Amino acid sequence: MTRQASEPRLELEQHLHMYRQMAKIRAFEEQVNELYKSAKMPGLAHLYAGEEAVAVGVCEALKRDDLITSTHRGHGHCLAKGASVNRMFAELLGKAPGYCRGKGGSMHIADPETGNLGANAIVGGSTGIATGAALSAKMRRSGQVAVCFFGDGALGQGLLYEAMNMAALWTLPVIYVCENNLYGEYTPCGDTVAGEILARARAFGIHAESVDGQDVQLVHATTKRLVERARRGEGPAFVECKTYRYYGHHVGDVNREYRTREEEREWMTKHDPLLTLASRLTTQGLADAAVFERIQADVKAEIDTGVQYALAAPYPEPGEVDEDVYA
Ligand SMILES: Cc1ncc(C[n+]2csc(CCOP(=O)(O)OP(=O)(O)O)c2C)c(N)n1
Ligand SMILES: [Mg+2]
Image (cartoon, rainbow, N blue to C red; front, top):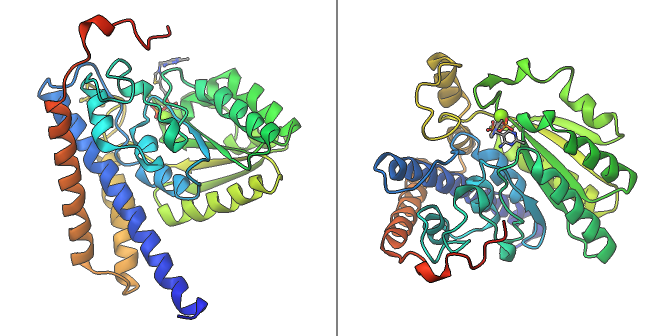
């Protein structure tokens, strides 16, 4: 096969893979909501449904040993970087095979094997960790790039600006990915963020762009370019991804009085990342409904197996309650 002939095929495979990854995150989060409602999951979780194109578009542009840091809304980042569905469900249910032996829960999932330095319950906390990881990668000349996911709420945290300052001064291979989902908890972003978001990164001389975070192909192409740039030693970048969370701030936030049902419907019907990709590939004649139905069925089977695995898994032994606990 000639190079020209194989490339569109490869591209289609990658786009279908991205669809599958997004579908997996969506189904995972819907299942987590069910586990919460049926009181099978202890505590709360912040669901990533609606924002899948950001995690998948970005992580698809990374190598396995590239590094990410995540947030309180981290399930999508973990799955997109390659975490196991079984071990994620186990962690959420407090079971021994979970990523933190069931002792960390939703906001502390980390997976060194896939370069995931961890979710973080501290808003903005991951910015320092990603920047430090990028400094380490540069000092070790490992060729790794670090990606820092954070929400619009983290724009109010001073650590982000200290970290971006050092990243710019030291030309670090780090990409700051701001997931602007219009709200921080129950407050619209416009009530808390003054001025222009990109101007904040540009003030440090950091290259900054804004993209439609519901378009996985665009997120992927943009990040790929910025990751290659960082890998060449050309320094940090900042990407604002405009996106939307479909559920409340966390699973218990069911009334959502701070936003309208019309706004939600608009995002879910006109800007859904899965529908957008499926309809584009269908219009281009590259795939049809049967392809997406098959992927959805595969994903459902993987999620069903994962949740059954976690429900049946044992809790940690009471005697190990203080093992692997650092704070
Ligand atoms: C330092 C700190 N302050 C406050 C909180 C409480 N808190 C948890 S999530 C959140 C909102 C975060 O909003 P954003 O960064 O936009 O992320 P999103 O939830 O929208 O994904 C806040 C204020 C916290 N966890 N850490
Ligand atoms: Mg937000």
